[in-house]
Length: 305
Length: 238
Ligand SMILES: Nc1ncnc2c1ncn2[C@@H]1O[C@H](COP(=O)(O)OP(=O)(O)OP(=O)(O)O)[C@@H](O)[C@H]1O
Ligand SMILES: [Mg+2]
Image (cartoon, rainbow over all chains, first blue to last red; front, side):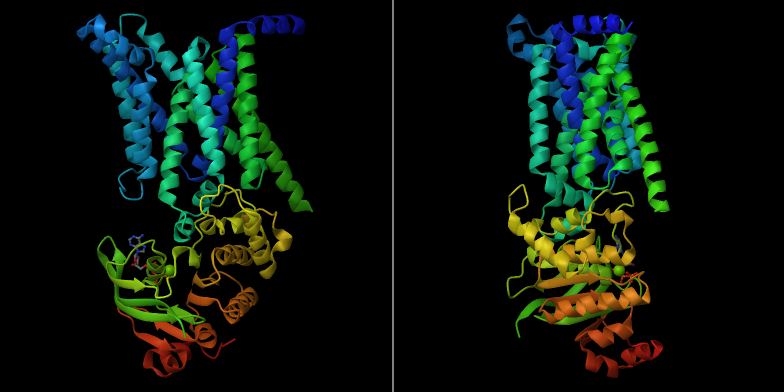
């Protein structure tokens, strides 16, 4: 039984698309867990969810725009537009970044973005996205299209080389930004007033966090789909916080948890033929439960001493 | 004596809504200024104005000595630190050094030494790896004070540093602040404890919708407001 599974695994890992999925999955998991710690601590967990819906809306919009442009313009323009057609991220990324900046970076000035407006924004983009997909879809299987965008059922297994490189570059950027700004991100997250008062430009770092968040979420859409992104962002941080007590240890362990559960989730989904995204999220959930139990045992133990 | 901060006819408030007006005072190096006044008088608002977090509606705050943002240390009133924030004492104290770091992404050894020195000074070296959220109120205040000292040794703004502390720890805290002041740190402290204010401070600013008093504490005791409040405190002078 186990030998059979191993054989199956070895066989699958010879396929380039599986290798690509593994690399992309691990990288995306790493990036989202790094940001997750900050977002959870800033009480912005839900923003990941909202942004992913915005990205979903933008994605369907860009699909339609591309089709319209292609229909209107002749083959001559296709060379230039080809890039857009191949890569819808070029529209989705800036739109999501803009919204993220409005939500996270500019919150201090415009107080409009409360809880309710975030919910409105997220449901609004979801509705528009689905409407567009449904009305203008090229006649194929609409519900499976929508399903894969929302739950990422297969898209990670269909990554092109271009997607993979995009993913690698973005991850390098995200990790670099995070490492270079680590101390300032800590200060701004822990006490924004103090950081500002002592000369750290909190606004700048909030904007950086917002932009990076948007980038990670657009990337993560490929892996788990827009509905399950929050899991990728929130679970590792929450699990780590059950057990670890300093910022650094929480960041490191949540990155480790996230990478491990993504890898395990991808392997499991291949072996069990389950959807990748939800398998990863289930893996994260299991880790969370285990860590919660460890946390409870730890605190009980300390009380007795 | 070197003048560090001059506030001239400040009007304080939020979004154009005035909280307190006509606030004028000066702070010299080595002063111990206590800001007193009832709840909502605008004490915290004044502190935020001094820190540049919430600029005054009108009036000027100037620093003749060229005091920069990085030269002010701050102890916030309600530490809005979320209850479940994972952070060790050392991480928090170190974060006070950031204003001095320029663009360096990592802490320099100088910054680490500074943090170690301030922790030593406040007697929290032994708990530097402990989790902040598991400390007692008094220990937390020491940590935040050490962080503020990392930011500067020129001027410390303390917003109700003893709120919620028991009498023993309160006294200890006042002792620490007094020592810092002796070392030459200018102290600007908000307090409801007028008896202690009168005991420790060199100057008093009594805020209300308009300031009721600013000047030396010796003169404050003689004013009507001062007398009312000090007699309320009923000889509890520590
Ligand atoms: N962020 C804010 N936005 C708008 N109004 C505010 C804000 N913070 C405080 N206020 C108002 O400003 C007034 C002064 O508040 P402030 O916090 O300065 O009082 P305080 O003197 O520090 O009181 P306390 O002794 O309770 O700390 C209050 O009426 C308060 O409602
Ligand atoms: Mg106050």
